[in-house]
Image (cartoon, rainbow, N blue to C red; front, side):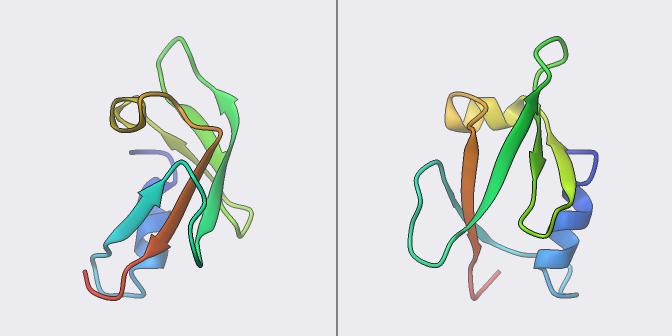
Length: 81
């Protein structure tokens, strides 16, 4: 993960230095959404918008994890990291 994802994770950690996330390509209770707005097929990965309007680029490892570069990634920080 590069290009903004590190800052997003830092924000979600609330200053704790680490955070555990529940992630899925289908919505679940109390989740927020990352929305893909641009695929980068030559280098792999895609650009996503966060709920607060920031952008981040997620590398092709995301494709390995989910099987594609999902249009939406649903997430929720977990209570314990």
